[in-house]
Image 1: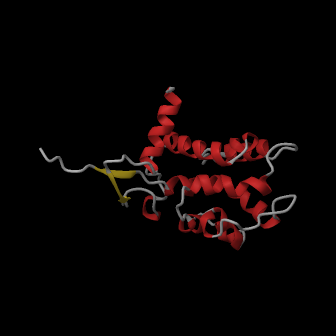
Image 2: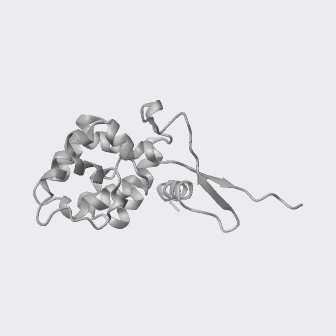
Image 3: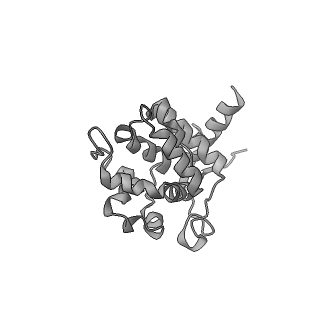
Length: 179
């Protein structure tokens, strides 16, 4: 097992995996991160989040779109990633943006954060990018991404901030030893 595969495996165990003899509790609900009071400070390191995000994208997103599979929260860097990804003959976002945000959200509803970041000021469709599981088969465009969703991409860095802040590590509860 390569070191990269080890970290991806470790990240998946933290976020969703389980051991046969152990039981996984509910998601932790920390008070010092991942909420408005903490200004949406992430609860986990970005490096670990990026590994989980990337592993998900490897399963659901084609290689030409995977450049977006990172929690880039810096505005300029996020725009560079978007511009590189949507260059002609690159990623067909109308087909794959839903998969990208699904992997970013990791089943979490991050609409509260997105509202706080002002995404609903652009248009009411931006919430789809913050909670893609609400309507997973929603039509996002035929030959190009719908205009209302393209407008939301102006805040891609804030969308990624919200998805990163929505990640939670799971607590693995060990069974008491019966010795």
